[in-house]
Image (tube, rainbow over all chains, first blue to last red; front, side, top):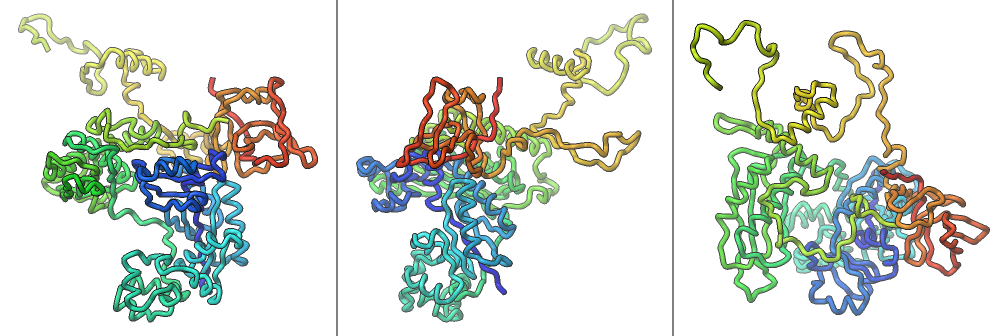
Length: 419
Length: 189
């Protein structure tokens, strides 16, 4: 018998994390802003009821938010990451069959469990009592339907946060209440193409001929159709595979014109990415560097460029990566533009231990490797950026705006909750 | 190095000077580092002038002790071999690392009677249900407070452990919730 799959999704996760340590926020509208305090990326139910949308630009709605008493937060990923890890640990105690899908969602295999609905309720209650984070649980025969079930659990409050869709009738009922682009994997671009074929609802998509879908679209969409029919095509991915690329790109707090400032920011991002690279035991053989101006200000001259830099041999040494990235930046930098963003992408990742040397090229020197490990260890222990390359700058005037940052309650001694 | 003059007398004598051991090299260290090295060497039982003991030390942020070691290359096996245990770990004592355990800092003086002073770190378990008499972190009308939790029939009393602070009887209509139970505390002098 094929097992059921549960999708556990934290409700308004970022807002819930903020509320955990500031109970006075209960019942008040809360929003969390993206990096650089740009736009709304998370809302409490009260904020949703006010009509605040995901992606709303904060600077355009500042006045309204203030009038409504909306509590505004900069994103505090340090806190969200720690709370997420706690939630996932609780879920991991229920089953080894766990796929952490994102910071606030996980799929759980329920094969072998009787009473799936009761199990879902226990999951929900345990996560709430251990971490204080409210979650909803959707249970169905496939991952795509589990997503549908989770959505239904969130919308239909009478269900008490758990929704089991194990029969076709239940699935039909749930799908009939959704729009096409509510279905997992049906993005904004795909939906109009489906509509052109006469497929306008999730139920029509489920009824579509999978072979035709494969021919007209691709195997990914075919799998979605099969999954809607209750045929499991997507397994749980237990171990997250090593990254294929590592990316670090941010907008600046203000427009940046000088090369030196761009270089500082880029050096910071490379350092950050190199740390991630080493944490996964990888080395990169190529870097892509990008710069761009503010596309939301069409009145200013626009410039976007990327430059691909091949390294002679894969490396995990921050210094070598920084040198390569700055070389790339020098190639594409043009003075006279007001830059809003820069970033890098580390590519061609290979296990650091398997880098092949040749007559002229050597993998990273052992002493450099140890130096990098020492830097990482110091920074892990004493806080990010405690030891860093001087090229990352001292003043960092370009740094992100984060005016409404809450304390990192769970990871910093000097930011603990005070009672 | 000064070159010695060629004379028929003087010069190196057999067996003179420092006994040969491993090859050495003269280096310059800033005075404060050299002093620190000397102190560290002395503390490790090396001679204060030989800073080898200092430099040979490995820098580690953490180390783990094996529970059991099997092979011993030479000499007598340690008689403690079968009795090795993990070093004591305060995290384990307090359950820190469990998803439900949080640390908070004591801010007020209302709990001094039970040994919780301002600046102390309190260990709070969110998952533990409060029982009458235990110390809790509670949320009363949106504010955090740390008090002794007393249950008298249907009534909940938050008792301060310092005569200067009043007890609070939680009104029925209040927005009240026990956030977690205090299971321990820690203080650095």
